[in-house]
Image (cartoon, rainbow, N blue to C red):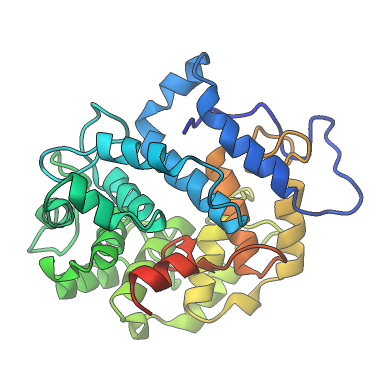
Length: 338
């Protein structure tokens, strides 16, 4: 899956959308299918370091659009397996270093494809190996997780670890209570959360912290009204959402903000109608895909989060998304036996 941007732009090539805003499902499916055909473009190779996550973004978008078979399942599974290292971690592409983020994407892909059994047949003890790789990255004193052997820490990695381990049914391999304590240490006076203790509140980090607490059943620790207030203030007059005060709107925050509001039961604190209109203005109705805002080039990252945001607000025709995992709810219900 290519992370190459374009060729379309949000709002169409002419800068205008049809008067009746709607979701151009077939165009978005065709756009995602085309991404791996652009191998003669330099940007295809410059974004190789995101390849596995790009595949997760594309496949998730297709599932939410109701087109789960739009990518060849066998080829997707082959690529996922090709990215695995002997230590149980996954790189972004074959030959890339193992990292938490791509390991999480690999687990999400395996879950979405309903391929854990096939994976175990191809890689004996594969699930356990993945779990041990993830567990090895936890700092048992602080509770947080590193992204890789080089030690960078971030609440993204903590959330990702709990996400993947819960899907693997291996969350017992880590110290959950220590992880919860670390998340609590990242809480700020404004109700939000940062990437580490004392860091500025940011909607993306709010998602990781709230998501982590949701996975382990500790949403009771959140001051929901204070956090809900901070999140609801992210909506701008044009309907879009930003990630922190005084920043521009961006389609991806349709996910980070809205999923967090959904998890704490405050989704109704923003205008879904205005948000839906903003998201739809960011799509290219001719070539498919979503941009961060109207007039910019589309990419698969903003495409999945725009579609997931629409799913959260129950846009007609979309499959339901799980606000905790950013995966089809039908998938997480199956994997987690809910």
